[in-house]
Length: 247
Image 1 (cartoon, rainbow, N blue to C red):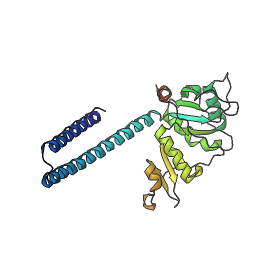
Image 2: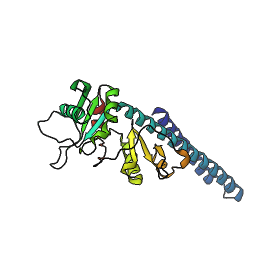
Image 3: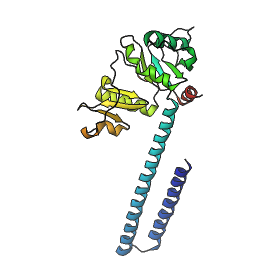
Image 4: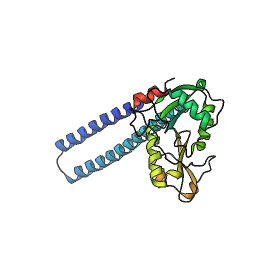
């Protein structure tokens, strides 16, 4: 952040100095056409410079935001969310995860030892809806095995989603709104869609949603899943997210 702060401070200092110079020149020199013309040219040149500088600064901020988002998503690599698992006050969240993975996904070798931590997300559940369970696995390979077997939950009222960052969650929701729930999915924190021309695309920004072109088509090793009751990924507050991914 220091380079950006220094850039902002430098721009503000330069802007204030040049504005002071323009003001002093206007007060000192008579209002002759030649002087006014020169001053206008200098002001136009300075305005172009400031516009370019602000644009560059904006690009730096966007790049920094993307890098931070990527780092945060990598920290969530081993985390999954289980939606629709009935909730009880005396429950053991980890054991519930084991039961779902063993009984419904048929991963017989999965045990409590594979779970690093697990807990319910959000506020206390209402009588009509249970909170999702966040589970962090010790081994990414185990996590991937569970992820690729999630289609076996179809019709069970239970779904599995990735623990997306807020920016990726918002992008995913926007994509589902435009292309439909059955034509959008995520993998390793990336958002994919099936465009109107039938091609599969990876989207990284909101601009991508409105500017998809046939030549941008890419092939990916997974297909979108259609679930009976798709759930929205849960986005925790910053303090809760930090606690969730803390080792």
